[in-house]
Amino acid sequence: MTRVMLRGNESIAYAFKLARVKVVPAYPITPSTLVPEKISEFIANGEMDAEFVPVESEHSAISAAVGASAKGVRVGTATASQGLALMHEVLFIASGMRLPIVMGIGNRALSAPINIWCDHQDMMSARDAGWLQFYAESNQEGLDLGIMAFKIAEDERVLLPVMVGLDAFVLTHTVEPVEMPEQGDVDEFLGEFKPKYVTLDPKKPATLGAFAFPEHYMEFKFGQWVAMERSKKVIDEVFEEFERKFGRRYRKVTPEFMDDAEIAIVTMGSMSGTAREFVKRMRSQGKKVGLVKITTFRPFPKEELLEVLRGVKVVAVMERNISFGFGGAVYGELGATFNNLAEKPKILDFIVGLGGRDITFKTFQSVYEIAEKALSEDVDEVNWIDVNKEAVYKAEGLL
Image (cartoon, rainbow, N blue to C red; front, side):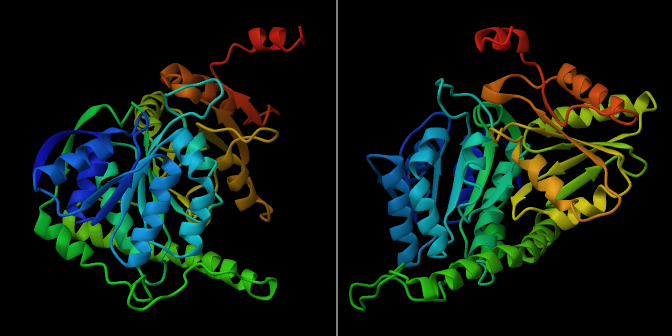
């Protein structure tokens, strides 16, 4: 194993290379452009035996990925933000056809206004498309999750596509030390992709993703639901096998400092590193606060969250997305997770870091103060942090 300096985008490209991906259709879009650039470099230099397919749009990129995967080869691609939105209708086709495509996402805000910086709105807007979703905290996690995604997606109990999210610029363009596994070890870990079911073959014509009448359609959707539920066990198995082989531990949900915590801060993605340092500081001051990092958003890890949050008084969910008219996506699903329990914590939502706004210790301090206040009195359930509310209220004619 070799330690190298990589940007987040490069970690995805190297994951595809190590996984021996055979087809990479892609269209460039900030902040994920370096993924196809690096892949094309690998292929041009003879380092990667694959077909790079330059296309005219992201819609074409995912369509080509569907065709290649239906042929029975390992396929990877990458996009971000508006590109993922343009792919939207085909995302459902990929999952409905049970194609194990892996896609790296440079998590970026959606327009309008135009913004190229980080938030999770792009992947959250695709959360119901039938794709598994992982969120990386670091470039190392980007590489590792990118490799593991193929093993999970290609498992016969799953056969669903996977997205691996890396926060725009915070990870995609930032250089970090990454432990690069040996090719032989990855080959042993992944094995060769051998599709179990019919694949496209001009000599044996077949129809995939055919027309379905009402008396059949629901069974196909139920099959996808079953596969997503079964993927929970597969993810655990793959994470454990990866740890045995490469020494790095992954969990769908990672609790830290939670043994006696009264307040739990829940995070996803790169903000988790800042959260960890903030919690350490608060612990040194005698504050009973812990951290819960979610790596797997789809399937939603409700069993693990129920376990690690049991006994906590206040859960502060920090998220880089918003479902207008309600709150953040994690907040909604976490609330549903605890819905049928007689004893449950107060669950508060904190909308932070949209459009690349910095998430600092000051941000966490604001969150903590509201969560601490909630221990003894009522507070707003949904809270926007680091926002100039007065300016917005004036613009909306409310002041």
